[in-house]
Image (cartoon, rainbow over all chains, first blue to last red; front, side, top):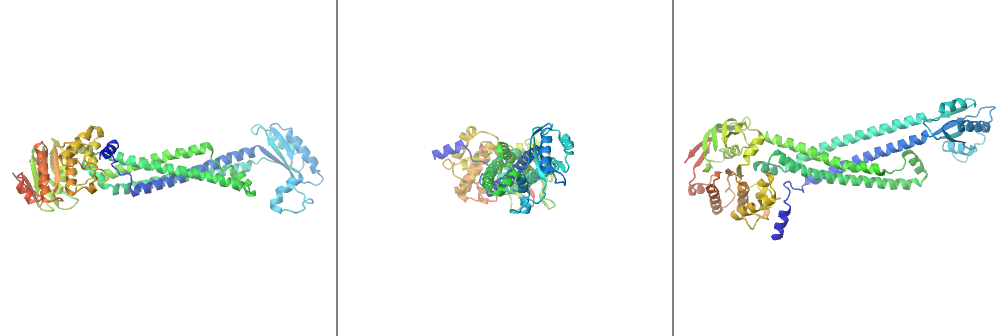
Length: 307
Length: 219
């Protein structure tokens, strides 16, 4: 008896019982919504990071293409192109791809084991820029007009397309996040109404003993804040685990031939510190969203009872 | 303390449950509210508890026209009124101690401030050894005594009881009535809705008789 007294005195039981079916359901729902939000947010971060990295890589490189022209000596033209490129301000280096390297580039389309020595294929000079912002690309383009069949590819169209695609993915991701937010709010509203209905007896008793709507809303809000925080934590941790597992899976794929291409396209499947920080920030946001939404719903429910 | 002037009540578009009630209840008085089932006893108690507003007429309580007060002010006044229900309405997940302390907790008082008072009151109503028991394991009489303790812990000026002896045996009914009488002697105004004749005969307090929505007071 004494021990029970001591326990009771230290901490009175919450007025709204902590364990109820709707509480567990709501926590699971919040966890799922948090997981989806975090995965969406993480994916957006990954795509944006990859796009920026890819765009920067591509922006540091130019390609001079020299088509075979009758009467022209390809090797001489390649040397001239390399010299012109190296003399251009902002260029770090220039190198001509060997015939084997050029053939390797078209191998995926024509297949292995073919004798391409008789085939007149265009040759490429890869130009690395030291300072993409101040490189005299137009000057190089003018200089290359002296070589018949030469053209300069800056990859600007690719970069534009890549940026547009990345922008679309980011906007779509934000839209999905907004929709998840709306769905979360609606689900919390329904769950709160359900909880209020199942706890109607408590609400009535509290009213009869003179509790204000503010007090009652506070009691329910405290519980929903806890549910939101626990659900958010569960979903956030699950999302971080998901990204860790996805990163490990990506590493194992990287050993295969296609892995390299995946890495080129999507970069490393790792969120980084800022990504984890973003996911961690989602947890209190979801908890606050749960608490605020439930409080407004409870206040509305109580006002409806009063009227 | 309480004054009704031509008070009427109807639910929605239905007939008038209470018709032109006019009466006055003095502080420190004890009244039985009687009448057959469906006569409107519970509706009248709800008007007295300020959880309903009359369709017409004026109710004055504690010197204020309560028909004109907003929700917040009504809640403040309700804290001066205790209520006991036939079906007890204790919260099953709270202990007897926590149920009785609830009105004080709602007022924002810390447990250290009210613990001694709650324990003293529970001992007074004979539940000193049942403080940590939950309502589910209490007998009907124990639940009703806990409900009475909850209703009076905040020292209300008015105590309303709706068929408080409806779920207990006759012997316990009398003991509960003695408890109400004791509270009345300590200054609480008491109105008990009941239709148990043996109690009305044994305890000679004024009767307010409701029939077909009309009220008659026998002193």
